[in-house]
Image 1 (tube, rainbow, N blue to C red):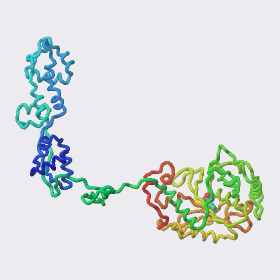
Image 2 (cartoon, helix red, strand yellow; image 1 turned 120 degrees about the horizontal axis):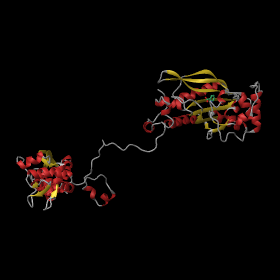
Image 3 (spheres, rainbow, N blue to C red; image 1 turned 90 degrees about the vertical axis):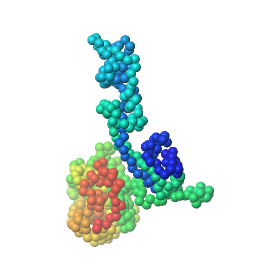
Image 4 (spheres, rainbow, N blue to C red; image 1 turned 45 degrees about the horizontal axis):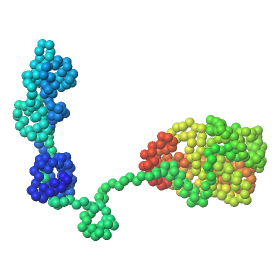
Length: 491
Ligand code: PHE
């Protein structure tokens, strides 16, 4: 309506000299006029010039009196013909109206009070000049601000002056009688009805920002895991089933030739299960071969020479490494005619550790193994070289180490091109005959294997120095949403 009125008026007239007056004349609110003028001038339909002038507005108190009458008149009107005590009058009109109204009514000599504090009125009716003037101001009809009555209202803080803002409006270069809506789409209807010829299309805004892409976000650990998986698959490895966090001590330790007194088998290092606390099913003849190799050895080994206890092997725990999965896999492999295999897994393990910047009680392990006839330490080094160079680390060093289940064992160090230093990246070795032969694997079968945590390379790649920022309940979802699409390759 405002748009029609403005464009229509300008069609007949040279200009709208004052948007305020135009608003009053056309019966449209000034705010509406202002909004339309702004939008029309942005599209050059009109040209608008600012107008500013001092204007009068009523204060909150002034507005109240313009509606209900001045306090002095309210007070007088509340006095009955026979008069009223001050107390009663105050109760009748309320204490604010009473105290203000009383002083002005006295000043105007509209009321009288006798010695017994009874108030009577001196006139039957009094004119409310204050209210009249306030209403006039409200309607914008008062222009004489020198008037004594007006100055009085200002003193009483019933009016205040304010800067009024409006416009004078002329036709702009794109003026038209009517602003047509620009089309944002070319529709099937437009084409069928032949309307498209006359449509005005809105221009594309190539600077507008698109909506942020919402949806799922992969956690950095998942991204790195995916990359690791791809490397294993490219190298012809097959994934081992790791869907059992609970494992028996037998598969986690005993099958790996880890003696029952080993400190890792203490509750300080390992979480044991209360319920169910023990396993029920183990392959009995294999168990007896494991018992024998621990107690007295065989296959050229002397064993550990202690009393191997079945109860210890039965204890359930949260697996401390995914090598427990490897031991199950190798055992089942040994139950069939032998064929070489490459296996990998990436899954969660648990250790009873003090939590700090780099350690949590649960983390993920990456594990790889190759079993075949006649493998050597050279094969292990070659495979590790291949594996880690695919991760962007081609300079490797090996340091002799000890694991109960591998001999020889090697810690793996890689040269970090970004940090310009050697960092420990994994552990590896060749599984011992004391582990493989009781399973029933042929004597010439060798198994080379290695393991590393998933968290460590992820932290290096994403520049995260506190593991709690990566994993656990303190992880910031903002980090997950904003982390870059990462390619492994530390350069
Ligand atoms: N299981 C070892 C660990 O937890 C890693 C490893 C796997 C070592 C295979 C040698 C061979 O650190």
